[in-house]
Length: 133
Image (cartoon, rainbow, N blue to C red; front, side):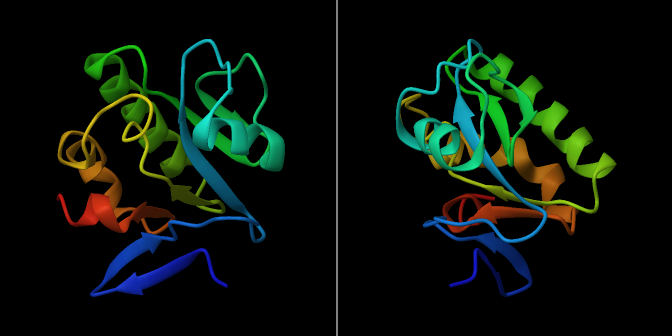
């Protein structure tokens, strides 16, 4: 099963990512302390090498976005992520519905933060984000 699809010209990341293909990066929500104890963060740590203690950026085959420190912090972190994605066109970033679980945001609140990423060929967003853009 593929982790990506193109639907109406939109790059969509699967809602169920169990394995990563070559050069694929699992983008998940965490906390700034990098305590990956639950949800997608725990899965990223156990399956894809997210480092304990790293709450933002690339580690293993993952990219952590801190989602628990407030909306301004999340917005800043998404900006850093977009810079990273631009600097690494050889990688395919599979964004999960970051912030929409334990952090308590709605897709309507988080999706607009990724608007700039919609033009990047190597970033795939969850369908729920596309539906809210």
